[in-house]
Amino acid sequence: MMNLFQLFRRKAYIIPVKKTEKELLECFMANKAAFDQWLALHPHPQIRFRFYFPTAIDFYFDEFKLFTVYFKRGANNQPEFQEFKMSEANHTSLCSSDWRPFEEVIFHFLATLEESNKASLFRKKKSLYEYAAICEKMNNLEKNQPSYPPSVNKNIAAA
Image (cartoon, rainbow, N blue to C red; front, side, top):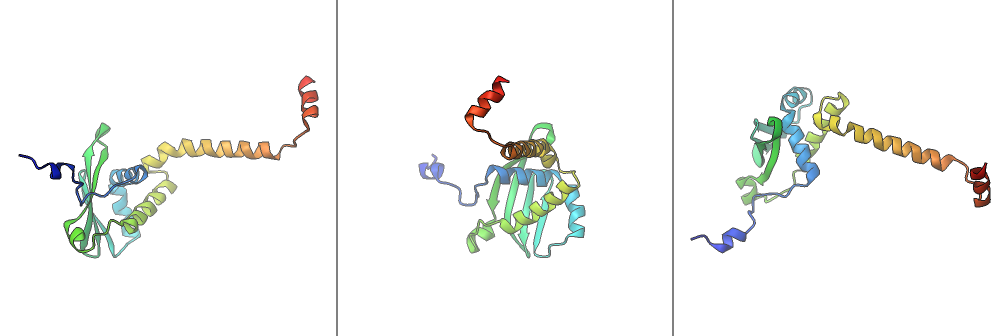
């Protein structure tokens, strides 16, 4: 018989992840080969990643495994985020869910890919950034145009 307490209890090892972080991790897993090349040029001695492509990534700090990210195969065989877990060693000793140092390395790598226009996530969102730039330019043009009193605007519209 199942214990109701266990059914409703939140698993202590699972770390909640925001949508942007989820997309960051999915893009990181999808660009594993490029990351291996990038890491040779930009070593991070304390931070290490171990890929189990396409199912998981282990996050190591020094020689200690702190986190594991699990993926499942989605549409077009692309990795989809499943869950982000704290390792048992981390849970028993540190109990830290802060993975910002790893996130910074991942973001630095993806920013480098974005500069070379290879990352699929940034390529998808490029048109959105271009649209935002056009809207901002149009707003600046509207602000720089001279404004006339309402009576002059009526005369201009009538002409």
